[in-house]
Image (cartoon, rainbow, N blue to C red; front, side, top):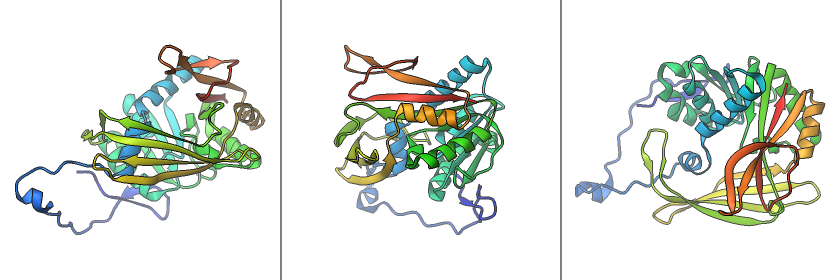
Length: 310
């Protein structure tokens, strides 16, 4: 059974909760009384989000590949900024003995969910994942090999001075051979309002149970061409027709690749590379492979990783 947790007011870390009186389970309603099995409907937005958009195993494999290519060895420490449920940190610790991770986020309920659903399932290795509630700009952690800020989370910093200050903090938190990884998207259609539904099936929840088929919907709303302000939302539609509108909402500035490169160099990074996802003309979709690019023609939509070397 997953343990209950709370946020320590003194340290900001996720710690075991104090004992509570057990709650009575619901009886299950009429259908349960007749002996039938109610159809499972997953309504947990974190389960749905992870099933729809996250692949921590793929992310960690890519991060390790980049580090081995650039530094000639395995990374042993990771800091995950804006970590959400800390799925990436837990995967990083799981894949290799001796790995350690620090995961930072401002949202206590999300961190507690990640502690129950991801960190607690690591058993003895759970001690190697440190969950911290706080601001990524002020959270103090040891120097690490890898630092990632993914799912465009750093776009919350809308002013140049804000993002530069964050990158300078990141540079200080990296070791001598450290590497920062950011993701970004863009393209000719990325500045246009759009709604993109996608059916998600065949996925598993953290506890290993099957997540019933559902529809994930990405909505790109208002875009301001003057300040590149962008509002995006995620909605879900469940098998019973229930819609979870605005399950997640993001108010960002869309930063361009040249802006990011210039800011990172100004913040003290030695070099910056771009790894962009390729395109399969026959399938008319991305091929899922990120390759280092010196130049790239614009496309209706593209995804890339920005890799900054300390």
